[in-house]
Image 1 (cartoon, rainbow, N blue to C red):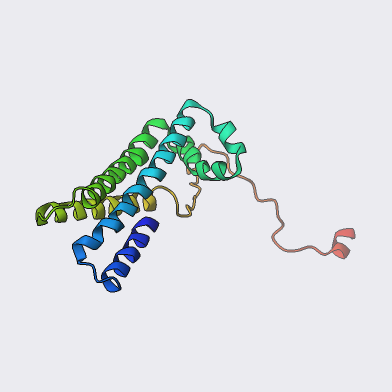
Image 2: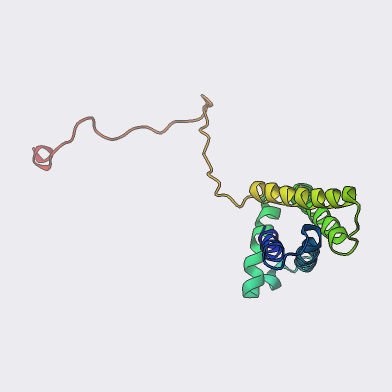
Length: 174
């Protein structure tokens, strides 16, 4: 979302102060979105592949990288590899693909065709919506774990050994 906010600010500055036409101002903003997602997407894929190979212990020792991959490592441990790959990685790749394809056509293949322009903008927005929903569902929130009691009648129950009324020390000595 950071890249989308920065790109929107770049767009507003160019349209408001430089008086560019709205479609010409999209070029520099979409180039920023394209390169931002290309660079950080490549770095994320690189670290993800290193985690799949099993180099997480080495990566955890590097301070900034260890903090960054800890969330992925915990999710893989909780969900399992196949579930993690489908839930997190498939939607992540889908959202990055939408963002990269849409911003590429806006930045480098800009034409006067409005249908291509609208389709590219729709792809970028859809990519960010999928990315936002994936981040919301991926465990960035705090989870509360509730314990479930076992109501099986064969399970032995604890015996209550506390006295019904408090006994003072003086009464106890008598």
